[in-house]
Length: 156
Image (cartoon, rainbow, N blue to C red):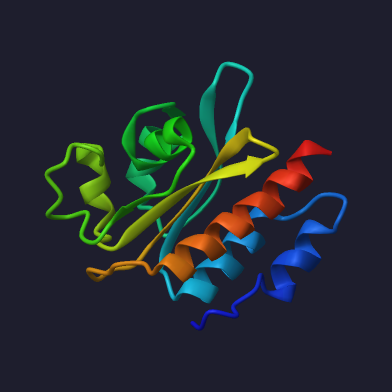
């Protein structure tokens, strides 16, 4: 990935549809970052993150990440801080940011970003690799851009 990376046409095209397929958007995002696992959560009226789409999450974990409180886990902290949260290796992290069940995903390099548009929070997007990985500033900025594009669609 180079500094001139932009949002792929597949994501822009899907977002332009009347009813975007969120799983397709997540798939395209994972392909862009060469990631195997991802989640897309939307903020509900009770300030909880509700799972909208996921790829690569073990079935037994889905109930644990279907609803995430703001401030809990990587997605909840990204939402609370309104900033990306990254872990080079979720399996060895001892910061307390990742929930204990997150280790059951078997992912290592992880990045969660808030969905923001005009300072308003719409949810979070999370991507992860099965290997230790430090996401670059360019990659983090691109995920934030994708999140902003999703947020624009949600604001309509």
